[in-house]
Image (cartoon, rainbow, N blue to C red; front, side):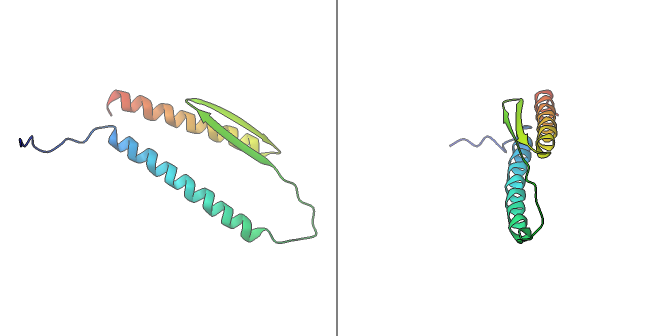
Length: 96
């Protein structure tokens, strides 16, 4: 068996790690938000309003939807995430 020496790390491997960490942090934030929501959902006699928002990113196109005031936050977050994705892709292509 021939020994070829140490394997060089690909410049894209750090972007893979950053992407993986962003996904893990997202799961942790969703889990923490669910726990906080359960903790604060005490029955009260006051009136409440509910708003829902979401954003699905397909390739580089954010598709946002919602009702109430949260859909604006989801849309802004989707645009920011799309810009970050473009930046990571651009820097990865440049070899930085």
